[in-house]
Image (cartoon, rainbow, N blue to C red; front, side, top):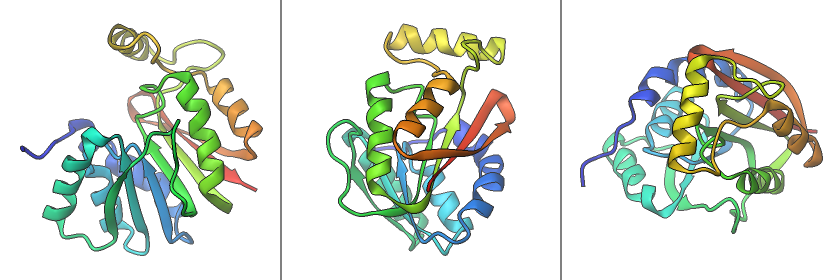
Length: 196
């Protein structure tokens, strides 16, 4: 099997790191929901060696993530676990949960279960970091996001860019408070929630 590769991971990793590194300085255990190719996990773990990075994704991505881990030799990335956000979550707890480019791919019912699950596994004072595009007041932030959303809908009608207000409401319903909404390149955001 050829090792999977995501160009967008290489394009956005420096920008994401600049935001999340200061937020995770006092954390030790982090769960990544939707590790995809595994590229982010390897890069962030190398840049933040104090973290134990727990990868997770659907079954189809596990072998690719394992390839990245094996070839990297990074000691602080654990073998990925299969995680369906609407079925069963790990029994462990974490200081932080990170997910990138996943919420707009999920059906909304899965987004609801994402927040329920994150609350279950997140320690008190823990951080939940979401990277990706969001709409505000029901409007796209750019023509490119509108085109991207149409592409998502053509692929899966139940997926699509979520409204920030709906995400913040889900967070509140699950005991999470918005700390900051970071503007990122390419019309993306990082939403930083905390379990207080």
